[in-house]
Image (tube, rainbow, N blue to C red; front, side, top):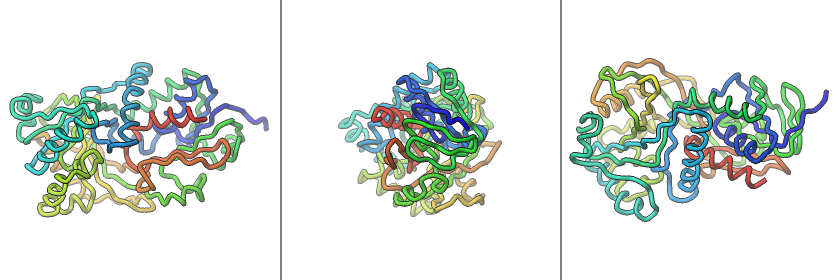
Length: 373
């Protein structure tokens, strides 16, 4: 059998894989992408489609998110994506949550140049006709973006295909070695191979990935419709995110939020719940976010977890919601850092996310990895 050759071979058609393919094709490389399913079905399409700068911890993640913001604008325009660029709104429900936002705004936001504004009083009351007026404050993240990833990833695939990227869907890559990949569609040669296989730590490079001691986190996700319609244009978070996202979680004021959670609703901490909501193009909301960590993603959902998230959503949006769909999100977690770029052998690199922030930083990771070849 004749072996096909490309400059860059990418394993995985999630956002990380597509980011590397885009970075390669822009540099004039011939690019081949392999995906084991018939369309992207992993973490990138199961989650919220939020590309956040505001919540990123100072350091590499903030730098990557800022770079990715410009890349999303470029890709969004070129691929015709419905990219919402109105930013995010993080609502403080309690005095403790408000104090975290105040401390962030007067300190870290100014020192490190986060583009945010704290909305209170009339500015808060005017948001969406007063729909969120029962909150104490809202942090408006001006640089945050959001898209409907179920539609966006297939659009990106078609855009890249038009640029000359070759895609092999429903094709399993069984093994990789310097300069060569063995797949269910035959053998392929490449100058560079990048493995972006998400939370699959067993099929490829299992020994090297095991050294990172990565885990998997499972999320319960819902698509809902508000009974009282709302033309939401922002990504939405609550003050619970102040103990989850690195931009806020290490601030001294966040300890009071943790204490409040443990006193009033310890199940939120037990299940790692902090409400995220993203609008869809159809006037619906994608809501979550819970976290169940382990070596594998168990298939069983907890109705109590869904109920807690629905209650949070109904309080945040001041109205009842109707559930349209439920599913599980899943992504790699708890590695040695938020991501790993692992040189495995000459011309073979594994790129893994250990958080759910691939949409926020993935395009920049792809640029940096390919630029280093």
